[in-house]
Image (cartoon, rainbow, N blue to C red; front, side, top):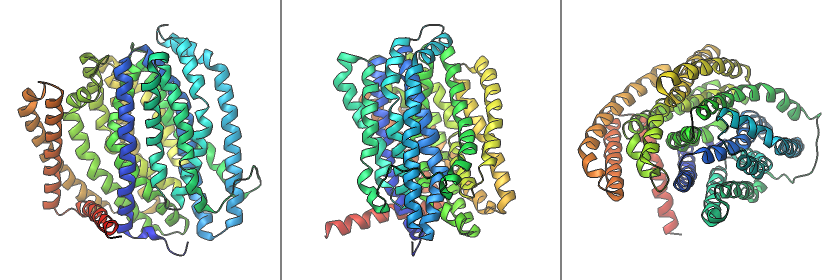
Length: 530
């Protein structure tokens, strides 16, 4: 790589803009999928059965196909790419691809065999009200998505290392659209099982859409395993700490879901729907920023460019705060009308809306911390320091368990969401302190000034949104169209007020956002003249 194109901030935000659009399509299509499921089936033990059947393969996907690839594969691949070691890179990729295929196929077989036992355990937690037969069928249908999604994660890691982000970001959109098509077509015949059929077909397309662009790597796949390869050994040395660290996070999610399942029908589904709505701004913007910045941070760490890495880290922290703080306030104020307009149709009742919107408030509180954890963990991983995130995540298991147990006594299922947010807060603070101790000043003064301005602009926006919605509320609940118009007006007005005040406060972050739109305009102009 003769020149690292991502040292240009302008190019960073041009790439980020493209990824934002791709991820936005994916997240919106995911919400549509959830809307369809909620509309057909409400929130019940049947939807809980699907949620758990999907959660199990998704757990392995998050741990291996996403997290391990991001945390271990990309830094190593980027390092070999930077050094121009093409032959060693080919052996490394072929070995990892073969190992992943064999490992995930075997794991899928094992879970397929033991699905009835898993279903029986979940039914006991649900007071023997969960339909074990439906769980087993859906779990067995979806479990082999592990193979396709693991290979898809590897493809994403390769493409991101080559600064290609669009197709990997669009892959979840393809999965969601295919799931929607299968549900609509098959639900009269197969009921909720149609969701599982759509997921397994969509998961294979998730991988296949990325395959054509893999030619950029110059690597032809060979069925090969070289356990003596230095990079393969390095992956295995990093794998256990990373999986334990990220496994702790997923274990926390499992504990939350177990508690939710024990609270009655639909609570697991309600918790999941709330998180997916909260994840819309988090997944669209924070993931986009991290997707673009992480390969850069990995390269900077690999060549010892600590100054450049600090600048990239500061940029990521400030941009995440610029979006997540106002998103937290907006979602908290508008949680009920947002859930009502998105999901309250057919079998999704007003009581379901009240439950999910209540949970959403507490999930929203943690948005900024979830976003900051993304960049903090990946900064440690870029330095190949996996032990520190592991220790912090391990401690969080006990903290989350204790908070879950205490908070559900006073707040019901909402306590589980608040526990998740509080754990994210504590982990963020601890990791920031340790990172500063390890590499020195992180540009704290600049970050603090930006966040004070963000908080001021967000407070003004929040007050405005509250009063605008209070004024429009009586008009909004006359019908669905009125509700959509009222929410849209409130969000647009609130966003405009926030942007105006950040501009008045002369924030750098708004300048970067404006550069994104200027880049789109310039590209559009060029295309129109080609």
